[in-house]
Image (cartoon, rainbow, N blue to C red):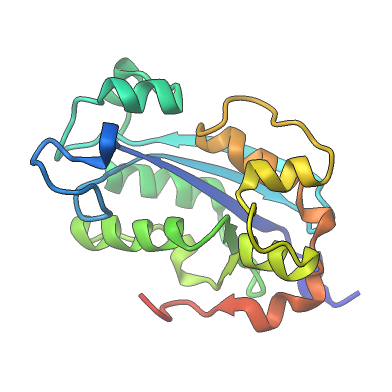
Length: 204
């Protein structure tokens, strides 16, 4: 096997401030410009679905520090949890320490491109980037669609259902969803990886 395939991959699932009807307190439509990351759900795993480690890194929002009832219900993240959490720059440092010095063949994954774009947006706001952004990104949704030929129901929950798997944990809790994505890795056609990678810094 190519040594690159033996390097663990990092699966990331974010949770962020959000509101009913997708309207921020300012009245603007919610977007990465006014939403703030409140959790980095991280799971290190092999490509064949062995979970090696997982961790939830909570983040204290500063633009809209009070979570909406909708957000708390959706994510299960409560106000006291983010009040006690570090701010974005400190959370990035904790992630970097946890991740250590990855192998040069390291890559990170998420279900879709939203997570990559939101990390980029918040990193630019705070002028600090988690080290994972120095590595290529793989859109697992795209890989799964290419592998299975599924075009419509391609959310993570639907992908689990497609393979006869039940959701574990709380859906829309970052670390639980990251672990659920790990359970889908064995069903991916990893020979497609190279052509689907987004190189570090591309398209940001």
